[in-house]
Amino acid sequence: MRKKSFKAESKRLLELMINSIYSHKEIFLRELISNASDAIDKLYYHSLKDGISGLSRDEFEINIAIDKEKGTLTISDNGIGMTAQELENNLGTIAQSGSLSFKKNAGEDEEANEDIDIIGQFGVGFYSAFMVASHIEVASRAYGSEEANLWKSDGVDGYTIEPCTMEGHGSIITLTLKEDSPEEEYSRFLDQYTIDSLVRKYSDYIRYPIKMEKTRNRPVEGGDGEYEEYSEVDTLNSMVPIWKRSKSELTDEDYNRFYKDKFLDFTDPLKTIHIATEGTATFNALLYIPSKAPYNYYSRDYEKGLKLYASGVLIMDMCKELIPDCFSFVKGLVDSQDLSLNISREILQHDRQLKLIASSVEKKIKSELKKMLENDRENYEKVYANFGLQFKYGIYSSYGQNKDLLSDLLLFKSSNGDGYTTFAEYCDRMREGQKYIYYACGETPERIARMPQIERLISKGYEVLYLTDDIDEFTFKVLGNWDEKEFRSASGDDLGIEDDDKNNAEQIEKDNADMLACIKETLGDKVSKVRPSVRLMSCPVCITADGMLSLEMERVLNSAPGADQKVKADRVLEINAEHPIFEKLCKLYESDKETLSKYANMLYNQALLIEDLPIDDPVAFAAQICELMVK
View 1 (cartoon, rainbow, N blue to C red):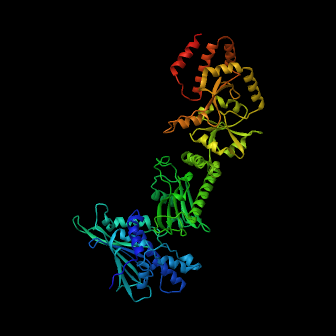
View 2 (view 1 turned 90 degrees about the vertical axis):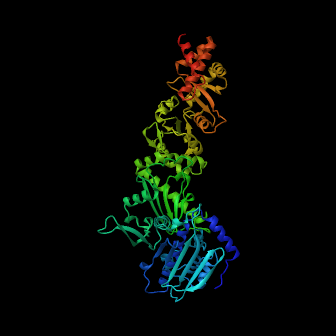
View 3 (view 1 turned 135 degrees about the vertical axis):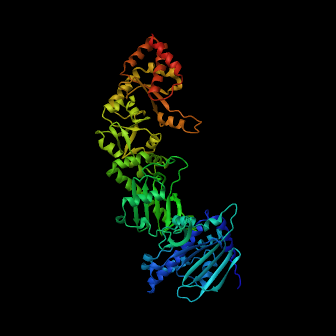
């Protein structure tokens, strides 16, 4: 018997695969089980196509056996098996895939497409076993053949093929595991619990039973605390994934139990989304919206992604390409038989099919959220309380590319009442002739409701949206408008309200230009301008900003970590011309400019306090108040 060598490129590929491609050595078991499932699929396909009698799908199975004394792990199947030539072709040349050629030969056979599903399309999966094994033997007997053959290899040095005896058809793969080392404990793959866990993790939904004989202990009847060993065969996999079952067969309890088991949550999800699609993107998906945000959701430590299966085989535990950042809170899985996989099943190509699936998942999540918003407002508001901030980040971080996807999911408190409102609901309530959507920023809705800047807007019947998150105004700037209605800040330089108010303020500014200029000179570069206000009613003064940078944006940017370069909005001191203080300022300008300057500083600090901005010198401010009080 002559030892055969792998081709040079195959030998190098084997070395690279063992040492580089697979990040987790445990993957080998998934690969070997998938190959066994393929072999059974092939035989089942031929039984349908060629009318072979005597083959029942119920008889097919995959078996795993552990021999701790010999240090071997065996995976066997009663599938189609291989001839000596097929052993040569499939195992002698790396990256030669029997599954791939079989799938091509099956062509467009409709019956085959319905009843056969080949997982492995590349020939390197088998060789992943060399990550844990020093020696591999494959005994195989093709269906209908009287001959069996044994393939042996110690890895990159080559392989041999020789006749052997074997009962029944199929393949028996025996791995002699490597000796334990300080870096790797290979003997863990001889532990029943480890094998059981790996099968449930990676191969739970293989369609054929995966069986293993387990050794257990039981008390000896009549014995005094003595135990005896006994063995029984267990089926390790569930075989029928919940996501491939009909929705009518499943209850909320079924869905919730699966979610809590697979995604390690103690609470039921708020929403379950079960998807089954066919066409350009054929896949099944089971998605969940959690009832609470994970503790690290809004941190860099949080990892998004959906579990990715190919025909029931776990390919990736967290496939981030399947879900956009704005919906990163969604947990779940996708299972497709149409994905293109590269040389190892662990690394997924970002191909067209994957993008189609991701696009479909995104649209479905949006659709379900919109339905919740319209038909189940109470639960939607719970979703929004946990994850609404992510919608805003999604709009801002994409520079508005996602605004059509997300903007109609946003909710805000407003001057209309205690509840939340959408942009659409706000627009439905707009007064006749209203051109703009007004908003104001603050720490809480209660604080915003007391802002002097919104008094006149409210008095004229304009509703004001309350923005309480740091990201809110940045999101509004990116959005620009809703349904062609521009957003306007209650603290902005142009409210766009009735011309009479604006014309009156312009006339007052013109008539009192010298007094206002004197106050501006007193305040120096603390403000860019001093002017009469068109927005104040009961309050004497407020701070606003001209230009793109608002006071709220200034606060957020300057409080950000690492904000060494401070930004400053163009602050404007607005004085209420209808308030008695304005008349007082005019008189002081004529009679006592020194006291006017003190009033100017006091009013500026007062405006800062109203806006919840820091005062440069609180002690001097307090002393100034006392000084003016005793005059």
